[in-house]
Image (cartoon, rainbow, N blue to C red; front, side, top):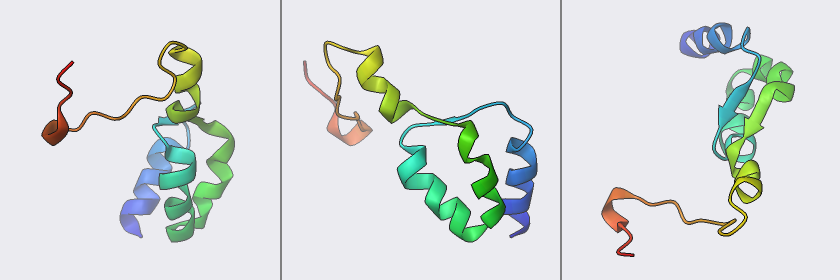
Length: 72
């Protein structure tokens, strides 16, 4: 829990916490492991939710992984 408390101390002063699919994927694990993270939920910006707004022509892209490069 030392690492989690250090991470909490590092990000808690931040105005925003931005991540891709952070709200439904990463954040619940952090809160479970270190409940103080629950107090920061209002700072989260999830880019997975914003993606369809930013890219109207292709709102639901597939993440490109190195081993699955797109050929187009």
